[in-house]
Amino acid sequence: PPGAAALPPSPPLAAGPEPDNPPEGPAAAWEATGELPSAGSAGHSLGRCKPCAFFSSKGCSVGKDCQFCHICEPGEKKRRQKEKRAFFSTMRRLQKSAGENWPSVPSWR
Image (cartoon, rainbow, N blue to C red):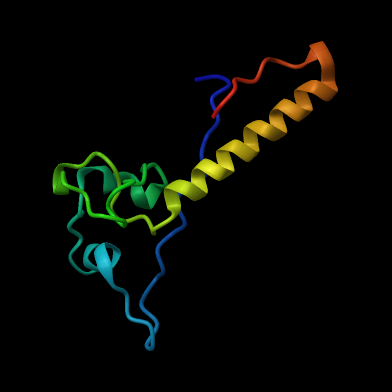
């Protein structure tokens, strides 16, 4: 929709494991088998996923049916939230400096 802020895509997964640093976790399983760890992980490679807030901390009780991504790195949800807050803060600052000639920016908390 017009005026909607687009979040940047998730960082791309590495092309291959480094010899001293083999991949682990859901990302490694996904790379090895091609099987997605959750339904919400489908858009991960395109950056169109939403990280699961529970998967990396205490585990997601929904499992494969979860509509959120289980491939994103721990802390990805918080990083995106911080980036979104910074974006809207910058937009509000620009709006104030431009005065009435600037379109309204929604508040996000």
